[in-house]
Image 1 (cartoon, each protein chain N blue to C red):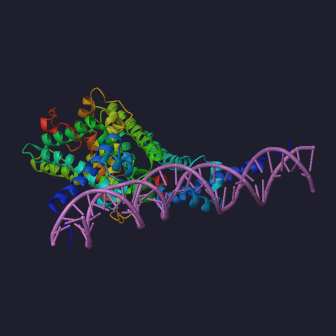
Image 2 (spheres, chains in turn yellow, purple, brown, blue):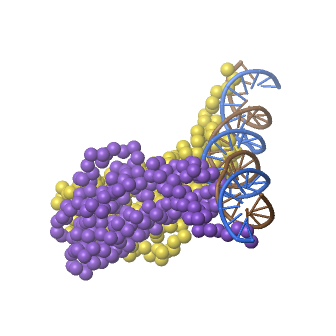
Length: 219
Length: 219
DNA sequence: GCAATAAATGAAACAAGGTTCACTGTTCGG
DNA sequence: CCGAACAGTGAACCTTGTTTCATTTATTGC
């Protein structure tokens, strides 16, 4: 034997992998998945195009990785809010509000995650993303049903509807060329929250409570 | 002079154009826009590939034409229902119910129009399609507000939400491989209708009224 | 039938991207 | 330092889909 993968090398490999993913993510953030082409990714990562294929078997795999990492962050933020101990209506409002606020503040990312035309592999992942949103909404709605503050026939279906309604209300404003919400999307966000609360049969008023620090869009 | 485009020729040209569009539409109906490739379209139309470019400057233009024709049919059906003289809640229910029913019955078409991954040109047309749905819902919701049977802060926004919610609830079941709704999607449809009525603050019950003959999926 | 013009053809060229691979450079243990 | 094994390279290649264009066929008025 004359070669063994040492720790130093393993580390460099891991670093390269990360560098590739980061480069791809940056490009997605700047210009959506359309910009995440292998050659530009490689260039930004400071590697040769062929090298990318030593780390990812195909472009789809790399893009999926990026999508998953980015969407996981979003989902964990929403999940944390949904898991708090608070009345269901409060939580539903905060989840929806956070979703919408983050989408507007991180418009380019939101466009890539929610609306950009993408090819099959990513479209499928996007459905999974939406389904996870629906899961989060489902839990909160079910809690609300038990509390007696909501009233819907089918919690899962209502959740799916909300998971479609919120992005739908945002998509126009999110389009890369749109500046509809540059100043304040507050009116839109309030209206979306109100719609969702009413849709699940909540009778009270929304709190209008904004985001905590840790829910801000950081980068 | 020795040549002049006679009526007979003009007619044949128009017929060819139609033949091309029909071929493309058939392919879309069978396998979505992914199947609407120039070579197969030409073959089915009984023409050469190059000939297609004498009728359409590019594939996008042809696909847009197909999308527009097909979606126009759907929208006119919904529009007709929305324009009837009936209480707003009844009309809203019927529009939503018709939308959902037609989507489920004409699953492949619905998938192509609503959910299939497509490229930019068609994605943009799809947004227009959705916006038109929202327009239809907006009118009905505004009527309902005037009648006093609905209560929402912003009719347009509520309409946009509903225009997103309904397809969202259908998309899983619409996926080409899904057979979730093969027997009856009645439960799902009822739940969607109920969700929408509640979302716009309607207090009464839905009628459960099915489709008239002319709203059935014919082909 | 003929000249003039248009329409149709389909093979070839082109474009754009993803993927491969023969080659070069690096790292390792002895 | 040597040879073995691995990592990195990037130009060539392949695939897929679109477009062009020289050539063939069809139609028209005279």
